[in-house]
Amino acid sequence: MSESLIRADSVRPAPARTRASASARIALGFYALLIVYASCYPFAGWRDTGLLPWTWLTEPMPRYWTGFDLVVNVIGYVPLGALLVLALYPQLRGLRAMTIATAAGVLLAAVLESLQSYLPSRVPSNLDLMTNVLGALIGALAGELLREPLLEKSWLRSLREHWFSDQASRGLIIVGLWPLAQLYPQPYLFGHGQLLPTLSSWLSDWTEQPVDLVQLVWQDISVSIEQYLLAEVIITALGMTGAVLTLLCQARRHAPRVLLAIGLMMAAIGAKALAHAVLFAPDDAFSWLTPSAASGLLVGAVMLGGLSFAPPVAQRRAGMFALLLCVLLLNMLPSNPYFLLTLQEWVQGKFLNFNGAAQFLSLTWPAFALWFLLHPTHRQLPAGGV
Figure 1 (cartoon, rainbow, N blue to C red):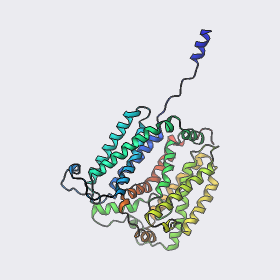
Figure 2: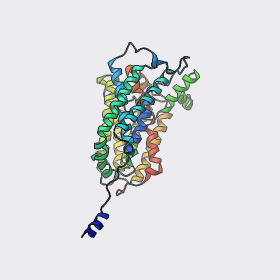
Figure 3: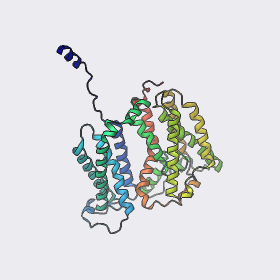
Figure 4: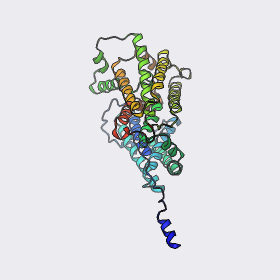
């Protein structure tokens, strides 16, 4: 009897091994880059004041500040603290994870404040550091409270494993950033990755001479209003198709593909409308929905109708082609004069950090998506879904 019990106990399955969250660690990397870009935005006028970069630590507290600035500085570091705690799991938990996460937030905030001493448009202060540290501390506490429901007993993880491939953690984070990339004003709907104007601005500031890389490509060639409208149709359709296919190529065969695609599009459109309402005026929430943009949405929907149920390999290749062609057209076209007139109404003001982070996503999202689609690890077919 005892011998049979011992034998049965020996074949009893071992308890499930706790796993690190690849999603949390990848999201942490993306968010840290976002904070660095937003803190150094607009990357113009770098100069040496002759003072030590950490002089601001010993200066008196600033006299002029607003509640909005304090709240933004706190909120900006809350996700960082939470992601640090989740990324340290399962190696570190509890008080040790919270301590390391808060210390990392202090270090990052101090380094970035010191870098701001070289930027004329930014003013480093010890008050900013204090609010950033408070945000990292709150985030670390939130991360510890969310660790069990998100990582140990997470229905979201079960749903992800049921609907998406085993390699989908990175891709889902990239797809999740696409709606946030809509927050920065763009010359064309879903036209992300327009690098040449930004590079021209940086080179002009560095050389102290006006540099227009787009003009070097086009020289004396002019574009009519009809061609601008046609370009918006094509770029909107390609950007929409590339983003949705980046999501669908990760889905298993039994996943609700149509609902997933519609949900992603609704999130992107909602983010776009909210950003225009906040940055311009509430009446301008849907000013970006021009006839050519609406036509591009229709063309993109037709393209996706034929590709939504294609094999993952075909979706991946079609998504890469759409994104590459979209970025190529976007950077070859001269600046849209009608979009430049719209930007004259945009006053960045206290949204400087927010706009810097949004611009970072708008510029780099296609590169992240292409990296995912091209990486050999991410090209494996979803288990159980071809």
